[in-house]
Image (tube, rainbow, N blue to C red; front, side):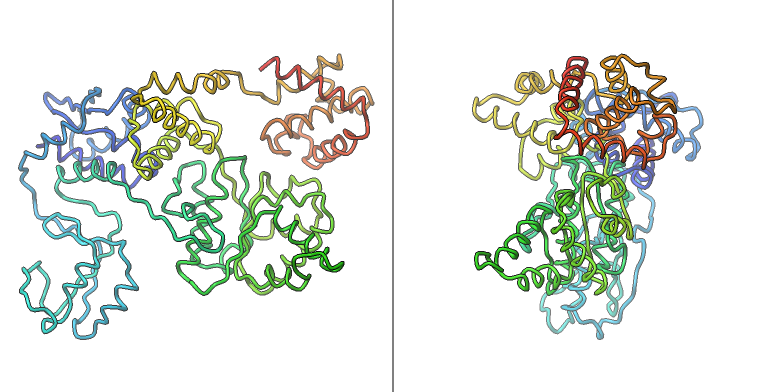
Length: 546
């Protein structure tokens, strides 16, 4: 029993200090075993969990044990059946000291309660605990109905007859260690994410509740939530950028869903940069009698929105007329304090074919990037998808997929679906071996070495027969300037390296110098046949190297 109580302390601290992804995918895949002779046994669901636990969270456990007065405890981690262990723990009846689990209470006179208004205000998120059993607060509010409206008698739950207790405790911490462990397992097995109704051209699956937050997107997620709670006031405009398939569209549409949920009457306009341009073209055509709607219709559609969500804004780069119309639309909305959220594949300062006045407005609010997810987040994403779809893929198979596919979320989910569909079509059980067979081409491609900016420079220098030192140096002769600008162009187009980092790589050059070099190659590549041929050959050499 001592081991169970200690482990409960560990879980409480882990819940407070770790990210949701790490807590769900690692800590909740472990359970305490025996404690004898100052040795505490930790049972892990599989080898992967054991490895990650020992590498990342062992110190947290030891620190917690020391705080509880156990200075010389040795952790023994093994792989075992955590479900069976939990079932055994349920048969243990621990001695539990009386502790208050309610974190905050408000006492409201019963005669002044408007039950309907109270339900609408509180919703169904907080929990109240009676006899260590989670119970929805709405149920408890119904029990607060005046006695003359209820005929049957109810058991005394410890509250005064003239009071209702409102509990603000969205992540309840239970005092019963066995209940905490079994509750954690139940949470993993019974995930029911929110699916929003389809509205405002938004994907109903793209909600905050279905978004997996990790270290790679924590800042963007936090800002998005703040924007959704105070549209037009907090962080306007909000600019999100990331590589492909990393969740920026999901996060943007989550903002729209949350605003619509809080303010159903608000007009939300979601579109892509391409659809904005196409609508503008139709408005121009209307002047000749061929468009779908007039210029006035077009402007009313976008400028009368309360919230404008525009995805992949980089599509309007190089389209001067579209940029001019977008500039005026942006100004009209911002002056009216309407919320603007924009996504792109690059930060504002790295646009090369967008007007300076637009670029400066992109950066006038707040900007956040989203990186590739770490392995814990990738595991959480796949488990969430499995639970949402009612799938039966084991955690071991999910761990293998998450370990081998790290490029982006879209590719990760695509691999997951490929394994699922192959198993259904062949009526095969989903094992690690089966998954590896289905994804053998994908996994083989992932074994290639990643392309680095150093590899690019080395290949360019070999092709032009110049030294890396000269190209990275200060000399500006034609024989060095062309390879230098081509290398900058390839680094920008073939990797996700920011202009500032490329400038640092080239001896501390300013990022504007890099932008100039990239822009010059972009302008000449379609006009200079020799330059285009050189770049194609260098790309072929890079493909051979990686």
